Image (cartoon, rainbow, N blue to C red):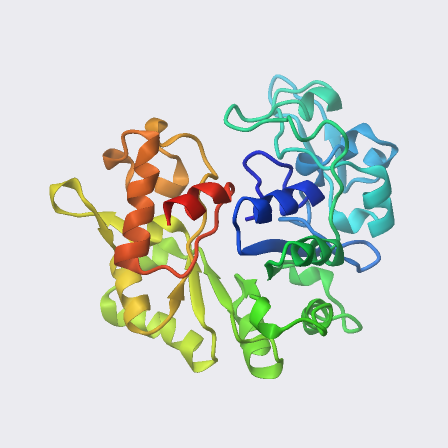
Length: 332
C-alpha cells in the first residue's frame, strides 16, 4: 500500500523497493497526472504539501493555494497539486517525505516537520525520489513483483473533450503493453473504470473494486448486498476491496467474526482484498478508524494477528493492503 509507507515516504523509490523486500507480492501506484499529463504515483492529486518538501522550494509560490500560517482562528494550510507542476519539475526539484502536517505552524518549515509518533523520518533524510508510473514499474519489475495501478484523477473537472477519462485509463494501460496481464491488478473506486478495463482491454484478468460505502453496506440486508455486488460479476470484475472493518464484527463471547458483507461477497465468488493494515496507531490505543468496529476487543498490538487469522481463515481474503508488509507475510 503506497510502498512500505509506515516507515518509508510513500510512493518513493525506496518505499516501493522496501515493500517488495518485505514480502509484498503486489505493490501499488496511485496514479495521478502532472501539469504536462504525465503519470505519477501520488495518493491524491493535491497532496504534495503533505508528502513532499515543495513548501520549502522555489515552486511553493505556484501551488494552487500557497502556505498560510496558523492564526488565532485558523489552522495552517496549503494545497499543492501534481497538476501545478510538470513531471520534470517534481522529480528534479522536490523530495519525497513522510506524509504529515502541523496545523499550528507559523512557517513552512514548521508545517512539514510534524511526523506522527508511530512513523519515522529515518528514511527521508537524503531526498527519496518521487516515482513516475514507469519508475514504479521498473522498481517492482526488478524485484519480480506484480503491479497495482490505481486509477485516481477522480475529479471530472480536470478532463476535457480532447483528453477524457477514457484517455487517462488507456494511457495507464498502455504502459503495460509488454507486461503479462496476469501481473497487473488494476483498481479503482470508480467501478466504471474497471468495467471498461475488464471488457475492453486485455488487462481485466485481475481487477479490484475499491469500496468505501460503509454507511450503505454495514446495515444492508443480504438481498441488498447481493444486488450491490452483482454488477461487478456481470462486468467481469474479479475482486471487491473494502475498508478492513467492513469485513468483520464482534460476535458472541467477544470473538471476531466475518460480517454479512464478507459472507455474501465470498458466496458470490468475489475475491476479497481489504485495506489497510499498519495505517493507524497501535491497537493497544484502539487502532483508529480501520478497526473502529473491533476496538472493544482489541487490547494489545499482538491482536493484529487475531485479525489476520480471521480474515484469512474465516473471511477467505485473497490478499490484504498493508503499510508494513512483513506483518502480513509473516502472519499468513
